Length: 330
Ligand code: TXA
Ligand code: MG
Image (cartoon, rainbow, N blue to C red; front, side, top):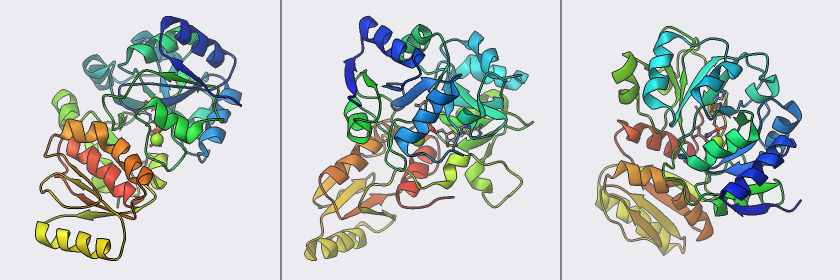
């Protein structure tokens, strides 16, 4: 299959919408990362997503809508506190887990009776969903296990020849994905930390449970995707905190053994083969994180040292992704 690369315009959006209506796959930009879209109400189309990504079939997808009123096509009921979150954060990077309607095939929800849904804050994504005249199921448009794509080029590298088209809307401004929030119970549970911070959610609805804080509690439902290895660069990634002299010593030892060392640092500057220093600009780190992980691959690093950040605000989502990139699964 040839993958068409379409620069986003009203003409190419109409073209991409026609591909989706035909039951085929289109990757498209959102404000977080690129998504790999299919008609959410067409189980054969949705099945193609799992095949193209190499994604385990029990890992459910996010359904994207272009207007708040389309929510009731996808979910059966919305508790009042979830309405408050929608009013505050949609369109935007907050995904809500709610009971699904019969229109949503189990293929899209990994067999669950709940569905994850969000309204993206990106003009091309919204125009595409409107033109397709159906909600669009879309996971991140990477091969399963790879860092999420934040440009059309990243999608090409992972999925060229496996999908029908890529709608190129330029680099993503968010980088880290949406926050996945289970609102089926009395207290909302953050299943995956993301662009919207726990603090922001709490300002609207009061206390939330952050799932990773309660990983030992088997009663809490899990986001099925979180058990798989994710975001992994090819090199070994090591998280480091503390004494910069000792860290530089480790880096030097590896380089002495002719290993290429990459660094992603937030507190100190290091000498290495490919070093990125960010200070504590969390927005910029989130935006560039996946591109940097891919750059380490492109430049054939053998080892990556990465400093840690406090797990507060956006730092929680960034550390979640880095922990997974380092091989943590739970
Ligand atoms: O920013 C984003 O969320 C991007 C853009 C494209 O919208 N999408 C994205 O999708 O990151 P994906 O498939 O890579 O991640 C979806 C996450 C997974 O961890 C999955 O397990 C969880 O959402 N999820 C989906 N449906 C769920 C459900 N019914 N219950 C619990 N977790 C669910
Ligand atoms: Mg993903």
